[in-house]
Length: 98
Image (cartoon, rainbow, N blue to C red; front, side, top):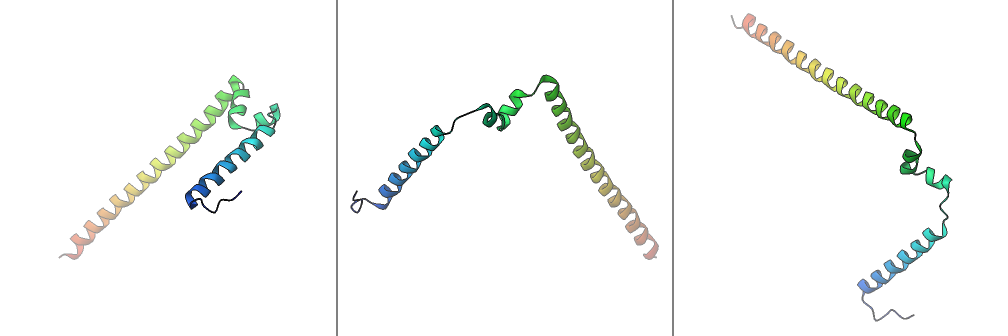
């Protein structure tokens, strides 16, 4: 094959098509078994029972609630520090302004 007359864009497109066909051939040669199917997240979720899905949902919900309460407590702690700092600053200004 002589590709000297083609532009660089044509060479890139030709190489891209070759790579795509090679990948397609490799994917077709891999047999899909139950074991390879179960390694995929969708396959695992489909095999989970109703109770397992409820447990997983509950665990994720509890984790979300834990993160939310942590963030709320951090924000309230920072707000408390700001209020205490403001009171101390106001007292400082009142005491030392005389």
